[in-house]
Image 1: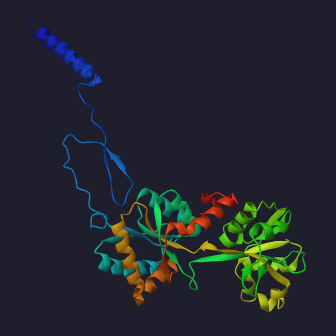
Image 2 (image 1 turned 60 degrees about the vertical axis):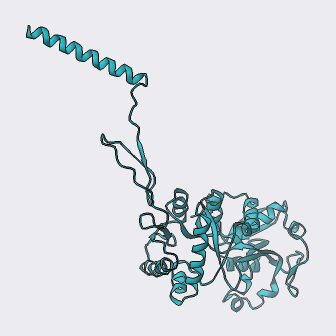
Image 3 (image 1 turned 90 degrees about the vertical axis):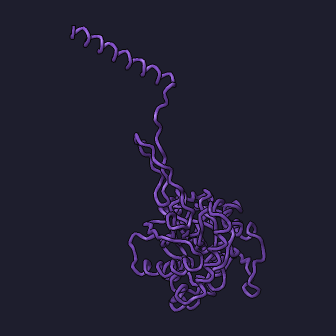
Amino acid sequence: MINTLQRRWERMKSFLLLLLIGLSGCGLIPRPQPVVVASPTLPLATVTPTDTPLAPVPTAALGDAGNPLILSLAPSPHLDSNALNASKILIARLEKSTGYQFITIAPTSESELINRFQNGDAHIGVLSPFGYLLASDNGSVEAAFARQQAGNTFYGAQFIARSDAGFLPYFDSVKNENTADASTALAQFQNKKSCWSDEFSPSGYVVPLGFLNQAGVQLDESAFVAGQPTVVRAVYAQGVCDFGATYIDARTYPGLEDAFPDVLKKVMVVWRIPNIIPYETLVFAGDMDNDMRRILIRAFVDAMDTADGNAAMQTLYGIDAMQVAQDGQYQDFRNMVKASGLELNTLVK
């Protein structure tokens, strides 16, 4: 009798198990789904739900203690204690001005910083000219301030050649202006040898190459000579290249005139590239709302007007003066980098 009841109970359990499997497969019983949890400082993480439902956690507003703004130090493979101390001074100024809370990150490379902006793990930082283009093109940052140097936020470049090499100058040094357009001036470099400073230089390679490509000039070959003063030396010496490109005016680099007293006479400017090359750019996250952006811009201006805030910016980013900037100001630079034919991601370290 007992054995008979046990057999019936086992058959009943098997039936119920098959029934539940069938209902689940038909969609009548919902299957548990993973929960996506967002963190202000970490990428999205997927966790397995528990049997006990968790109460929803409200997301803190950006800038609150539970969701602080993330300020990036300048990318470096080694954490600089001076930079870390400077960041504390700057953050104290910004928190006092805005009421927002801040934390810092220390990326080891600019590529890492750009990825952090794209993933929402950085809100404020400083990028190189190429780094800015790469990050703004993917929509993860917007320009806030452009670094100034000698009162300028953008600078130019120049094509140089030996005065006795047979090239015509299309730059008037007295009036400090070009006398012809780029196509006319640069056509004489067709099938000539060029000297560049290095593969990552905006003024010593990338932008001049963009102008040459836009003018349809084909070069014979190129030589990278490690440094813009070295470009001047190579052009002066002859034999390495026919012409070169440098910032304005690399011919007056300290020590060159001592070594070559006639360098300004022997090496002439053929044509000058206008001031379209930016210095570093202080950026905000691309999805930051306009009210927060305005508050932060005011706070940075106020911080730069104080001795300790200005010193902190110099220590952190090498910036002692800057000007409010907008992305449209970078369009000429963007066009020439595109004309160079080089991939942006190969220009960012």
